[in-house]
Image 1 (cartoon, rainbow, N blue to C red):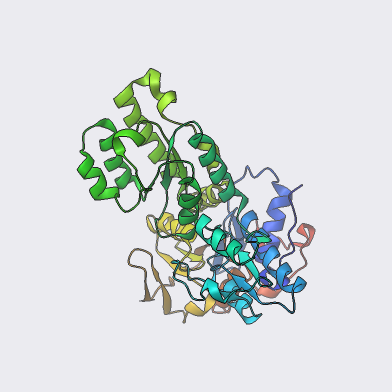
Image 2: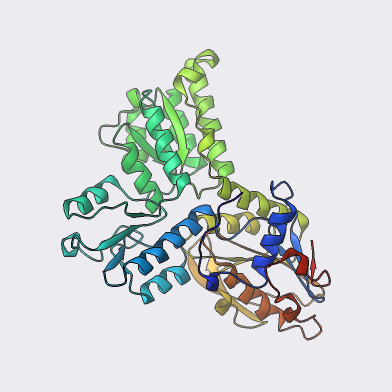
Length: 418
């Protein structure tokens, strides 16, 4: 049985959470990726099979709120945002939690201001060895309230394992992301480490591995994303690929395939296993499930897609990228970004700027809308989006018929068709 987490009720919802619970009961092995359809007559919402809070996020939220309950009279700090969702982080701040660093790593509160009796929470992305040492130096146990995602820790363990076999670690990730910084820090303790951002960068690295690009070329393109002393002529002879768990799983697999092919080109098929480590078991199941479910939504078709999540959420941005390639897509943080039937404010996923789009909602009826979310988005935010849009369709059936207990048997088939 899947573990149940004690997540505050205000993050759950009377509509979306019911859909998710029904699907879990109906399909416990998660084999059916077909969307759930909430049919309100003139507007229909297609809901992804997998979305919203994952295991790691629920675990992090449970631990953070437990710390607040258990230490009402102590100062409580987070190393940085616990997850990439402003609603969750702002609620913790309202309850007195203070952030030591920004997500970029910029210090907000000097470590010198911390006292041994302070409580410091490690966010879901984990933290670096350097930060651990800074906290220990001040008498603070950094892992008393550790919310590091188990799948991030799994990547660290795999990196450690292949390092002991003299493989260098190639991280597929965003260099400035907290998780990648943490994985880099832990990995460099035992191995030589390099970060690649995408398939395009991996192509350049493959050229170096094959011997088709110079050492100068390597340092020009990767010099600021390698561990100290990294020598491409030595440390690219044996490699293994791990990832920032929120990256596109298909891209990580493509990068691993590309680099393995480069290894084979250089050393021969019969030497591949000697020079390339098998790290396929490090891919985060939740990230892959959310991405697969989004692809299923796209295949099912719709007039537009609304993706809800934090604007600095890596996993959410990848869901947006998948949808953008097929249909009009709007990346919003909450229902407040939907200004009216005529105007929506959303994040331009390429330029990372908020933009406004007019005439975003089609006039045709019925209107089919894909509605899904990143792994750090509360179900309640999707409910607010759904109810705001449904209210604009006077001929639709009321959402009140969907405000029902968390019981699959109570679902009204006239509102929800699955």
